[in-house]
Image 1 (cartoon, one colour):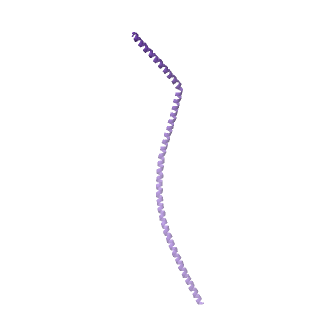
Image 2 (cartoon, rainbow, N blue to C red):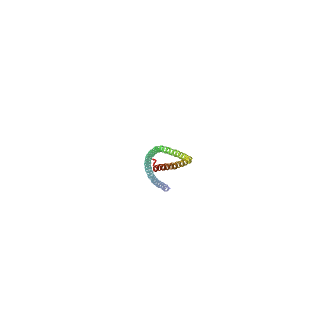
Image 3 (cartoon, rainbow, N blue to C red):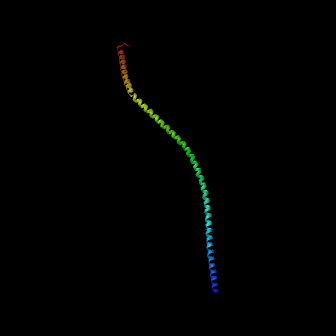
Length: 149
């Protein structure tokens, strides 16, 4: 019975030894995994800091660009207002020109009959004057031939 007892104790000791070896191996693998995980986290931390720095620089540039764009937009606003004023002035000028043209057309239409009559009177006057001139020349020529002059 002592042999069974010693054999049992030896078996327990061997089992415990094997268990310790497996636990040691598991802990060694776990330690290596934790070391790699730590290295990966350190690498990620450096990458995040680099990205944070680049993001801050990009944000500063974006803010500067936004300020520049805002200033240029404000400058363009005054230009747009000036162009709008010019457009209003041109429209007003066109309206005035249309009114003037319409007024002239109405007056020409209103005085057209009078102008035609004046031209007819002018033509009649010219004909009378031409006839009077011819008569005067005939009288003058007739007087020269008669020897009265």
